[in-house]
Amino acid sequence: MADSKQVLSIIQAIGEKIESEKDYLTELDQPIGDSDHGINMARGFAAVEKKLPTLAGKDIGSILKAVGITLVSTVGGASGPLYGTAFMRAGMAAPGKLEIDMDDFLKMLDAAVQGVEQRGHSTTEEATMIDAMVPALTAMQQAAAQGKDAKTVLEAGTKAAWAGVEHTKGLVATKGRASYMGERGIGHQDPGATSFAYVMETISSSLA
Amino acid sequence: MVGIVIVSHSENLAKSVVELAHMMAPTAKFAPAGGLEDGTFGTSFERVQAAIESICSDDGVVVLMDMGSAVMTTEMVLEMMPDKKVVMADCPLVEGAVTAAADAAGNMPLEKIMKDLSSLFTTHKF
Image (cartoon, helix red, strand yellow):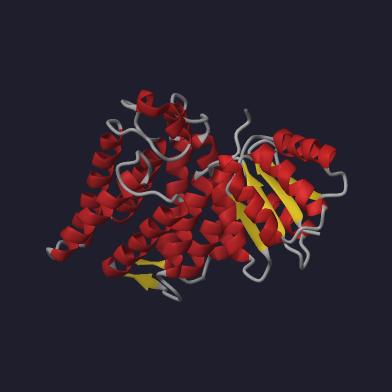
């Protein structure tokens, strides 16, 4: 499905996507959070982009771990430890690999989801990125089990991630800064779920 | 003496909490870790790590945090230093800092300080 060179270019593309959606992500964070999600994510991925040339030739596990550590050190908000943990756990699930197939990718995403749940002491239905991650993972596992090709599986994941984003509008946040809003947060789309959908969408379109 | 690290999204808040607690216990060992390198709000992995390392001894370190990413970032720093005696306290920041300062300056062991901090949730202001 992807070799380490493609993984590097996907990460680069994720950074570009986050940068181009920076203002939108921050706008989503304004009514329910501290108005910094887009700014924080863009700062983190700008640091990742600088780091990428030093990762050329490394295995996929090492690349993702380095991306995770960079995000933790530079994002500054909750998405730092959360995305940082996600990338680090995904990397730990692909040790020494120079190439990954769909089976590997699903294991990596599963490890990433578990990492985010553990780090955020959170689960689905709490209006967080997990509400986009879990449906994406489930949809891809199902599509893969039906023997669909990689492109179809990734597209199913992206579609489910965006449906998850839509679903966060009806939820009361019980984790993170949005939890201080209580029921006033209903109707607002979760910024973290949205940025994850962009990540998923970028992975999908890069490999299509 | 047990060291105390104050992690906050705000550089000023972390420093001021230290200042306030120092009034109670001038000899307590504190290290603030607030804000990001560029002066904006947020929690910096490196600042938290450096603060802990700056006051770490065999007696240990207790870390107090404001909220959200301060907690998660501290968790990650602690996972990277499994050989150090560092614990996170789940308690109100200001009351916790004053309690920990008084305890640590009185040379209480880490375990006893953590017990005092955990009782703060049932201590009312009035």
